[in-house]
Image (cartoon, rainbow, N blue to C red):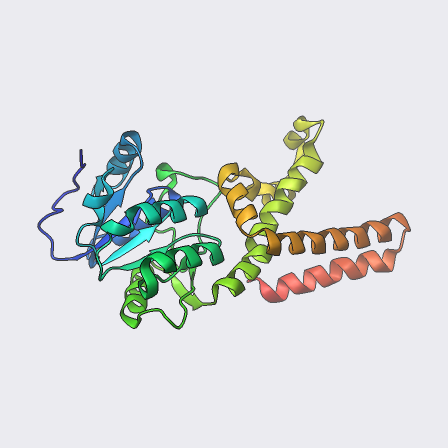
Length: 291
């Protein structure tokens, strides 16, 4: 049975469907359903328990487990799930999406999702990746300001319908995002280095630091906590991300391994200048590229 938000049927606002009320989907629903928003939000949840939790957290939204009901008469649909679930559910729900509705997603790997959803929706699909999130997950972690000043990467191609692209741009801008355009391939290459690689390295660092002696974390200061925070993210999601971007990530991991071997060699031989040069280059690169 549907769970109805306040004044759902009385508004003339644009209807937007959000498929998947986790951290990203729930935060998007909160952001787009704020007072004075031009949007009216309906949310699809996979199960009755998920729908009940979403309805409690999103009182201004319409929440249901019925995709046909959620997608009826929407001007835009946003798939906010793991990469594999986005492609799976898009195939299941494509027949319920109005023929004039724009479609986007929030997946962190774009090539596979873009190829799959373009087959279903053609130029109405405009891929997106909001660069926002945390190590927490689920609807209880959602917050309305998650996207404030965050970068949202859009990946339209030449076949994207201008009206659909404009509609999706307006949606993410209304959530608080700054927009940047890239191809899906360029996006995945960049994310392998600045998003997926850091998570992989943080995970390896936790194991290297604590394997055989988990109690060491009680001695750790800010350096360890800052360097490993993202390793607390959901393993299932990150497994999908790593495998969906395996070619780019594998190359990035090889680069890290090479650099670590260089550093290890300098330390083992006591080459003070080589160690200093290694650390100085890293300090310089970070200070000039990170505010």
